[in-house]
Length: 159
Image 1 (cartoon, rainbow, N blue to C red):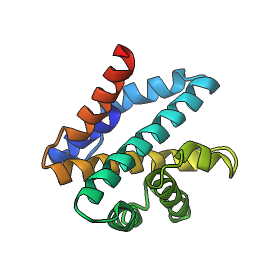
Image 2: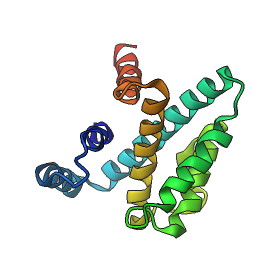
Image 3: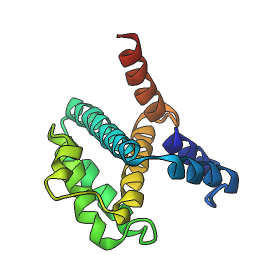
């Protein structure tokens, strides 16, 4: 929901953070315990995996390689976001994308290098955001990525 909210803000040309929304996010983050943070990181990695699998299938349907189409685009975009994505975080984020795009769990891939760092939180959010925006742009539907996740969650709850 946070990614969808940020996308809607960007689509509406509201690039400055909404102070009320940021306050709610900060309150939520402050309420998280250690296990909750791990769950949130696992959730972000799951979203990255789901988005990359959808993109892999979509690009394959058109005879293209998702990694070739998605990873360089997202890396170039992250390079233009030095406040949110420091240059040293870009290789890790690219690795997450490649892991997810080849069917590997990005969370498990990342864990082989140790614990997540605080400096990787904004880049991880940026990757989720950029993937959602990429999917929305491909489908010409501003809500497609959010529906993709909502449908997956409703399938889990109903199944």
